[in-house]
Amino acid sequence: MKAALQPVPAVVMYQCHTGFAPAAIAPLREREIHVWHGSLQPSPAEVAGLAQLLSPDELERADRFHFEKNRSEFIFARGTLRTLLGSYLGVAPADLRFAYSPHGKPSLDDRKTVDFNISHTEGMVVFAFARSRRIGVDVEKVRRDFDVEEIAERFFSVAERLALREIPEPQRYPAFFHCWTRKEAYIKARGEGLSHPLHQFDVSLAPGKPAALLGTRPDAEEAKRWSLWDLAISPEHAAALAAEENPATAAAGD
Ligand SMILES: CC(C)(COP(=O)(O)OP(=O)(O)OC[C@H]1O[C@@H](n2cnc3c(N)ncnc32)[C@H](O)[C@@H]1OP(=O)(O)O)[C@@H](O)C(=O)NCCC(=O)NCCS
Image (cartoon, rainbow, N blue to C red; front, side, top):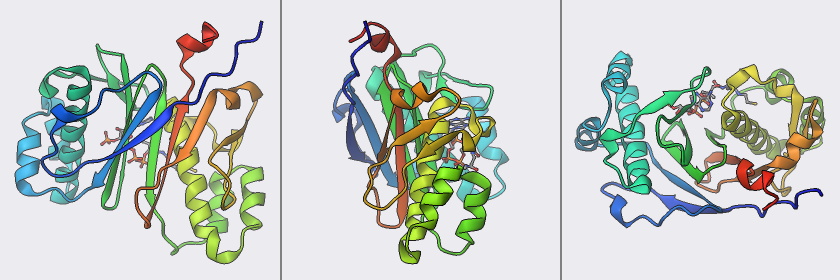
């Protein structure tokens, strides 16, 4: 008998702010995805405090950044990630250990019960957390200083390029970034980076259409296992979240 479609998880949005109290955060339930977002302009005091939570390899990575701005943003993002994960798991943030997929996706080394992904761009960082399902998140600043058709030609599928051409000029740039972040969130959830060919799947992009994974090739069933959401985090940014259905409950027909 065919397993029933799983209910789509609820996305709950939170804002990070200086000195937020992680002890007070709500528990992460099985059918929820928590998304935290915040501005990426940490004060020197915040950076110094969060640096105490990082592992030696993370501090080494931080020190390899050429510009202080990039160094402090990395420390802020990693330190906040550790703080949030520590709070969800009830462990000290500095005790968490990360493992990396062959394409660089970080995950928890020994506590696999929380999946997470992060994205940062000019002035903004976004974290997503879920239980027992692969997730990916992407945020981009909406720009208008490039040839949208030329970039779409390189990165979008045929169906996405055709849909983009139908969109009137003023809405074309936001539509481009919705498409970009939806695609990126999906490949980040899979953890394969650009080794997963971008023309082998289609996402929605027309204004007013909900975020969706419309088609996957060669396995058309793959598209049915994923949900996409747009994240309304700021008027200047496009952001998207991708989540797979929970493989354990899918197998059980839950
Ligand atoms: C890392 C990658 C997945 C995304 O990079 P990005 O968009 O520049 O950066 P983001 O800020 O969104 O994400 C970076 C974070 O994702 C995580 N990450 C790293 N590798 C990852 C991977 N393979 N899969 C998922 N997440 C990954 C890390 O936490 C990283 O943050 P950190 O460096 O502070 O640890 C990379 O594959 C990439 O460059 N993708 C291609 C971009 C592109 O051309 N997309 C076309 C879309 S149409």
